Image 1: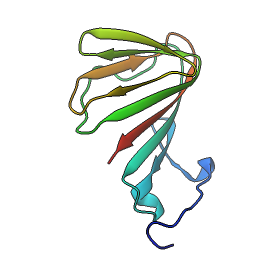
Image 2 (image 1 turned 90 degrees about the vertical axis):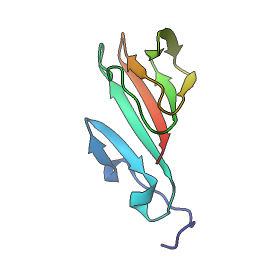
Image 3 (image 1 turned 90 degrees about the horizontal axis):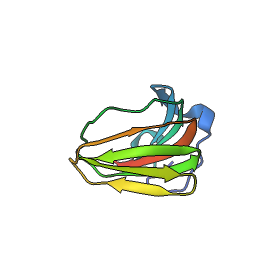
Length: 106
């Protein structure tokens, strides 16, 4: 497949990291500089406060999630999204079962 051509990847073909399927554009021949992670989170799960050298966008598909950026805490419900800035300390958790999609640039 030539770089820039459209392509389809089945969820079953995605690499799984920490139980979450990850689409890493560079791994699929299209040269996309983006990563999309599909998260099915159990109650109380989520990463502790951490930083990334890139921006992130989260979309809550079902349920709700709590997002913390620095000392500010926000609740997001299905149909909402949030973004985090590069190198900004963030954390997230789910008080109930949630399905989220997380997109990052690579």
